[in-house]
Length: 311
Image 1 (cartoon, rainbow, N blue to C red):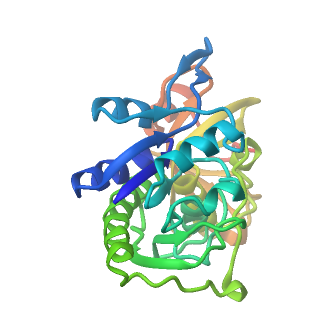
Image 2: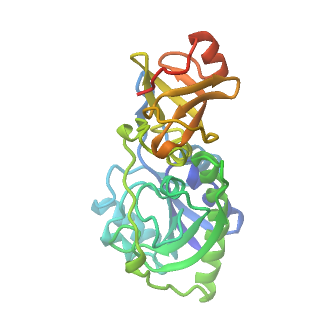
Image 3: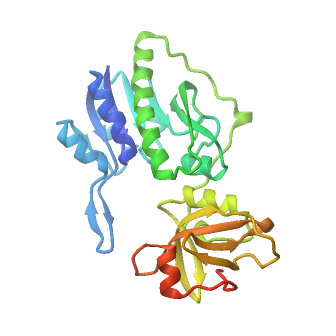
């Protein structure tokens, strides 16, 4: 098939590589413009750019998709389909009808569950044991188009968002190749989503990383897994911010200490009282401006003692 590919981050790369390897002709790769990044605001290109250049593919980084110039270019290319993988921008309705088979989007959830910007993190936050990937045809809504294919995969009990994202990117690439073959043969039949089963995710914000020790330990454990690497988890300890990179559900301990109280500081980590009488074990931390370290090293250096509070 003759395709136009829309994608931006690392998540999109396996799909781009897979459709090229499957023999499809990628007429154009469309990605976001270069953006300032880092402390010195050095301009960096999206990850897809390097891959497209390495593969010798034509590249476009338009500021806006709705302008006549880009629409004219799409019509001139006359693609059989457009593939969208984590592009990060809405496709204007005036473009949706240009490809013969429409815009085929890869979404990292089992739609209609977890529509929106944070489906991977939301599945982990909810404590789900399973998630998956969905290919769908784009319409004017947010992840509301008809479903083409889906594939499930378990979520590991200790799996963090970056690990799950990498697996879903590979699984989604396989599903995209299968979907394009189905569209080409006519075997992939779009099925409307059941809006009654839909859930919508929120955009992650920095404030979400503040630890509320009133939560149960399992909720905090899920947040640690979901919010890796951003926004991360943090608490205040002795008046300064402390990032928490490792947190697990600890063994139950009797007592009625206020949430946030340090119950024990051992080689295994810092045991902290949480909501509903549960206990979390902090296993890796980082002072602002300092390197990450195992909790046992932090305990020795800071002389952390039972009875202290993390807030």
